[in-house]
Image (cartoon, rainbow, N blue to C red; front, side, top):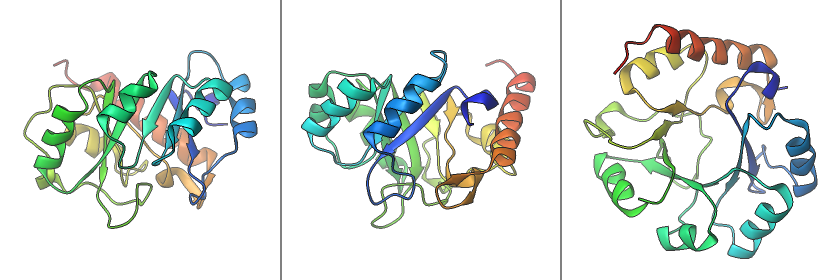
Length: 195
């Protein structure tokens, strides 16, 4: 359903406490069903190297998104392209992650909420962001069709990530909200000034 709306990437959550968690069997079916033009992202939270390697072998994601307390050494040792999620409390969190995770294809910046690795629906405090970030990065946290244009205009990320902002219930994507979100992003992309 989501892929048919023209998204660039689909994230599959391999974190059992999440209402969005999928099994490897379900993930394999999704992998087979989506276009090869859509990037498949496997989201893990402090998973063991064995589990991450199993996901890579069986699901064949294009990217692993590490959303826990994984170190740069751990992420690199897996030997698969990755994004590193950073829960942002202040600008120093972003600067530290930029320096530590230089091998990451992108950083995914999400709002910091005590004890929760992501998917909270909270937005990043604008004062917590550094003035400039000279690498690809993805904005996450609290985005929805109603605010994504403003967020794109304010932050100028390389991409945006949405989950709870397009759900009708926790873990259930609403096709109309997905379409509205994608349309808002595409409309912004058409009119944004070239940098």
